[in-house]
Length: 248
Image (tube, rainbow, N blue to C red; front, side, top):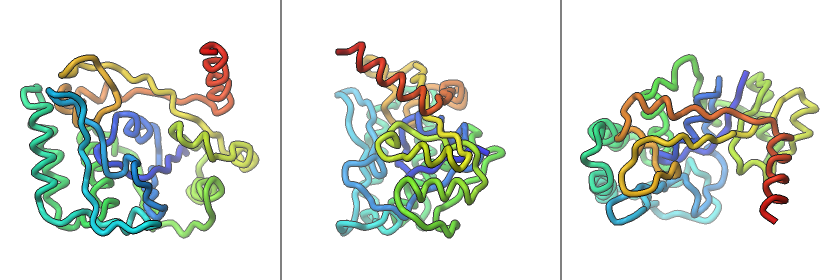
């Protein structure tokens, strides 16, 4: 049983979908504090004039608010701007209409009043598009009565779900208690990102842009670029150490 626990992100880069592809259960971690400058409400996209941000504006944001309590700005102005940026960036791509449709599907729901709603919906529509939702369970943290903080709470979530492998992105290296997971019989694996290239507009290829870029250029065949695997946490840190020593 492979578990991924992650804050939702707004039409994020391919790497998060590679985590989802490897998971049996994906948990939307939305009752944790929203961090300004995170990718929860913003993502980069390449345009004719360079990279820019698709940023969902927030309404009356207060310090310490949880992601599931943060409201998005009401009205359609920001949505229209995102559509305009998408058109500027990707019109002319073979599958631009697919990317446009995914964005519009998220915007069309009047139920999406928080950034948790919007970001989670953007993940779900892309997963459905690429077929990543098959034989997979998506859960909100609100559905799990799990206590704790930080690394211990993540471990408690994995244990509650009967997880044997916890798959995570690289940010977890700064706070995860790896030995505690192992003592509970849970293997910790970090993503081994391959950053597989695909045809892309506007200069040199970069993987660190919205997944809508992949959709627009490759359509459903873009699923072939979602192929990264994992690496054991000890090997992950050994590799980091070797790279650091090589660079010095």
